Image (cartoon, rainbow, N blue to C red):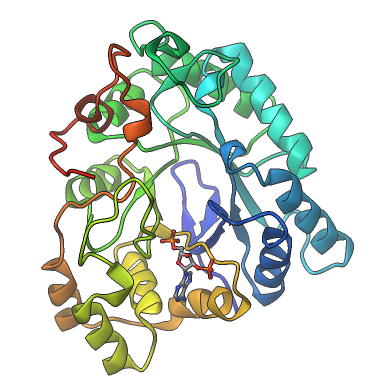
Length: 322
Ligand code: A2P
């Protein structure tokens, strides 16, 4: 299966579909990455906090050793965790991730969340373990990201879970512009405003949880995207699966899509979705599904007196109740 690419704001390219590894368990993710690379995936999306970068790294190393792929033709993304937002910590963090992944450089490094913790903390239990953005602004963290880029530790830098407001500030205060913003995006959370903003400002949007992967923190009743009737009907019409419709829909809007799977058959069908062309009727039907529903709320970060609330994390009023 051949991959196709988007061109980033710096002229580099990024594969349109990648393999997500969030929640890919130990003992399974090695095989998933090998199967994906064998089938033609070129992009693997990783993060320090997924706690599986060692195993992903073993798979990448073996795939290169066995000549399934070369380092140059693959695109590896990872993300800076919230406990390493000080500029010197950024460089240490990317080096740590590179060591786990057994790579010399990343293709994309993203600030995972616009949220900062103290360095010793992985997940905060109280406000004391967090650092408000007024004390450690994103512009400072970005200096560390720019340093990582200039040192050749990563070919591209970007952000994740950033609102229009936070992107605007970053675009204003940066020398190297963010190339990518990775956010939750699917038909129940279509992100039309953010998509338009990113298009106008040359920031590629990547969709995480493109299949609406229900997270433990926010499982609503009757909102299982993969079982949505509209999606199912479109899938039947094209003789494909609902997951493939969701991926094709993302691609139709020029968004990069990173479905997670550890199942060989699904890994393959997800990449095959790049051959599906949805028609105007399909797109109009899917447009009607938008309900601005977040599966990933980030409630774990909105601790009392921390300076972080769901409203200021997303820069919008968050009304959904878990
Ligand atoms: P699994 O990894 O067991 O194959 P998201 O990327 O939106 O977070 O979705 C990931 C979830 O969707 C995982 O539970 C994954 O299961 C499942 N999944 C991935 N691809 C498909 C597919 N083609 N059909 C059905 N479920 C899928």
